[in-house]
Length: 306
Ligand SMILES: Cc1cc2nc3c(=O)[nH]c(=O)nc-3n(C[C@H](O)[C@H](O)[C@H](O)COP(=O)(O)OP(=O)(O)OC[C@H]3O[C@@H](n4cnc5c(N)ncnc54)[C@H](O)[C@@H]3O)c2cc1C
Image (cartoon, rainbow, N blue to C red; front, side, top):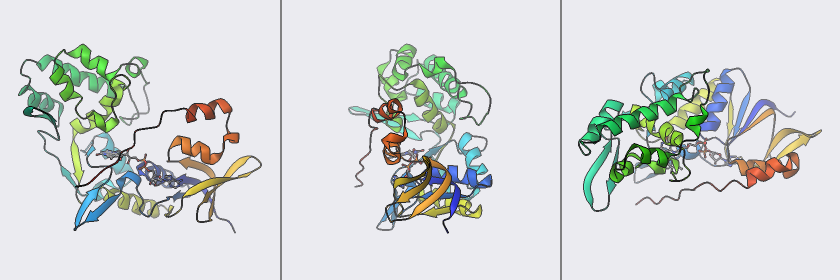
């Protein structure tokens, strides 16, 4: 007899596992398929000489009580089980430049953020305060980010460019570079990155910054524990390589190892172009398929640990 789930999820990254727990908590039967040996995607860790190394997530923002990730992680039941360490309040990130001995800190707490940078930019208090206000305003335009169901996305916030906003705030090039100093977190590009992308990233770290003691894979471990509690199932070494159809309706996910997982709904937690290719060009309107395939490839990291 073939088993059927309410929802089959492709990919066990943070997005896939959190979706799975939310659905399982709501009473849905859920199954998560992962191609790798380790669950968690960018939460994976590795060990050399008894030292744990993170691959993706190294530090996390918004985990103090009342902040957004704290609320999310509490809802899915993992918050109290995580072993975390708060980073340096006066400089969770430090921005440095070649030929400049200063270490410019990004501090936790908005007032502290301003005060720590005033040590290096004593004449720029107005600019720093305005910058903080703009960040908070941009984040307030995203109701879901603040776990509110009401309110709208303000178009004016969506269209502001990050570099243009910094240029407008100040002509102090060093200060602009310091404020944009963590832009690799969101693959910042001076002409294309909107300010809200910058704001949503740095706001969470300014609120509070944390490291996972013994690596980020503890998050995966706790997520899977919670998922199992609600009856969810996870399968590793299960790369989805295609889908099955009945009367034109997608009914199953087929894995490389020859298994087939049936479901009413399917969630893809993998790259969108790949998802569409796996489903098949003929299953979409041509204009939609072509538009997604023409999206520029995202920046991929290649890390060397020395
Ligand atoms: C180098 C790096 C550093 C980062 N640092 C931080 C940080 O310090 N703090 C922070 O908050 N965020 C950080 N991030 C971002 C964060 O790690 C990611 O945003 C998040 O983990 C992504 O989760 P995801 O669920 O979207 O996808 P992923 O983690 O990419 O998960 C996708 C999963 O799908 C699986 N998969 C792919 N194809 C298939 C298939 N066909 N069948 C089955 N399974 C498949 C993959 O193996 C993977 O496990 C970092 C990211 C990178 C790359």
